[in-house]
Image 1: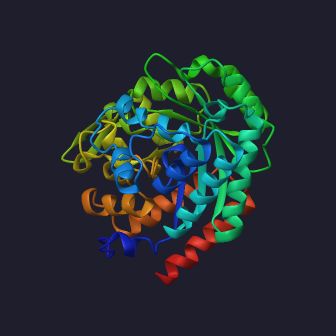
Image 2: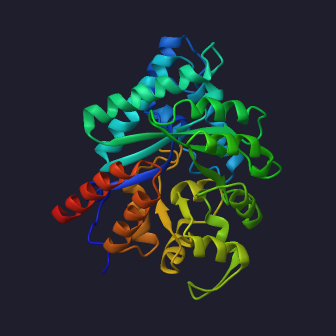
Length: 353
């Protein structure tokens, strides 16, 4: 059946699970302004909320490099534990207002050490904020720690992340530029994170193609951050996938979850337009598709907006939206007790919708 929800407001009533959302890409513009004032940072591009929100909107960028440049202005105001705690708490509040019942937020602690914080202090501050948000809203919030592909400290980041396994940190990720910085160059970090009790998701198939996806899988990725360029390893006819290449076959066969972020994928140029986004085609072919918000500030998005795009442009039905939500719950890195509780909450709320 077709989607019966005609507006983003109506879609906000649907329960959702998000696996791929960056804290430094999701600040409220008002919070950026407040944190800049608190820290004495005077170089924001604008000092009123509407203009600043418009500046952060990177829907016109069409390249990952340009899109990522705007993150400097959020990261610079997130250099104190109190700032990280506030951003994390508000993220959970915003998830909850959007109908999200389970979220895995992520951030790169090494980007927040400019004023003397340690990685451990940064992680603890975020965990404190997520816990505050969860207590206030009931939305379950867990944390994925990012290391940056282009940096050389991934082993140290993984070690710090593993120290919080069982305390809210559930996963480890490699983010940053794919081309020239293969996941396999970070095997020590990835293996250390896994030994430390963390699950692995790796950004791959966003700015680079199937070879990057294969490298991520060979390096231990259980989920793929974006993964949308897996379509370069299939043959499609009239919107239907009719043949798999070897990498696509592997992803399909093993049910590797694709953390697809439609608006972001368009804004960074990973796909040419919303109407040409392959998420619907991938779902119909049996790939393990999930929908995610990625960077709520830079893409002016939310999970409800992602659902709206999927229903209006990609042919998702009500059943499809529920399916990708259930896919996300099953692919989540939480413990089984939490997974069952979240799944029950989603089933109950769909029953009420």
